[in-house]
Length: 342
Image (cartoon, rainbow, N blue to C red; front, side, top):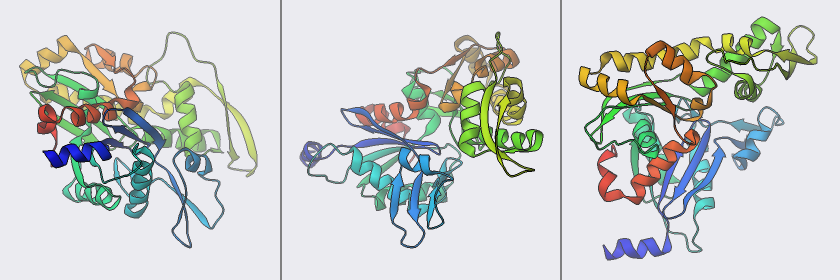
């Protein structure tokens, strides 16, 4: 106990949302202090880290041959161990507020469908990055806590967390997951669907982040009352190989994203079909809560409400819900340590 108090004076424990698209860090007593894209640029010759976060994302697809831009997380789990370790170490170093930096404890959000091998990779990466103790929490649980859902009550709380690499659908009650499903269809798949559509239907090659920009600007999961104006998109003509600018309409983007959106809707439907009558009644009364960056997709709530017949609400600031929830667990460890999975 005395040693823990001493550590608290000279280090700062953290909570991390190690996401496919973005990494967020909450520092005990300070809140969220870091929100950066999960992208790194390394030298192919030396392996040295050249850029990270927003700076690295700006270089994606634009680096010379001697450098490589990497997204070290894929489908919510580690795809490149060494790059992930370097990225975590850099973000932790940036987030430590104390002059004399000792190894912090950390709570990390992970997909509910994570395997033991993937779980070990997350723990090993964090330990190699300079952490003294790692606790893991499933992302839907963290998102539910961050959204202030009553996870300790004996009621059914249905959370749909749509991240960059995975969509997590869970029914949570009494600090435990009564039903959970993790599908590797989420924000990245929506972006990739737009990229494929533009190539197949418009003979236009666009980058993955241009696909993301289109999704965020005019992407819809359900027709809106007022049609969104077309937007300019930039790419390379497949036939001529020359750079071109074309106008894209919202109904084209909706058509492009239909398959991954349908997968998210069906995953949510399965949760409602496979639960108990009592939980089903709770969900009918309380509704569904959306979290994660995918919750910002226009019309998604309306689509779910129409197809499933229950109210749908979007978390306040859905992009930070997991990190906020992991931070709450860190700050109130005595109450919430039971929700960690290791």
